[in-house]
Image (cartoon, rainbow, N blue to C red):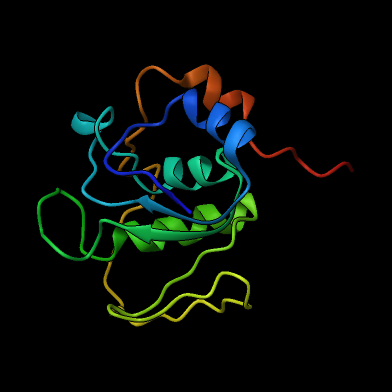
Length: 145
């Protein structure tokens, strides 16, 4: 298991994945982000990328929906994470609070949170300032045409 703690996207995540991965489960923080805090918290899109970099088989989003500390909507982190995970082919576990996760089993997304309006990554960007090259280098490859 890998646990991100509070972090920004780092080149070291690629090294962690190569040296210590793959991980059955990666608990990665997705919430409490803003462009002003982009080098402190990952945010949804970078969290999904971090999951790929550390070579997690399943990503368990953490650090969201508990406290209202950020400038985003309550459900925005998980909604954006699911969009990014689908784009990057990352498996995500979404157990209800107190629920269990078994990474080896099939993980249908269990939408236990309410439907609330949220902003997209384009509307509310929060990318780390020092990793543009890493972001571009580790982008999913487009399928050949």
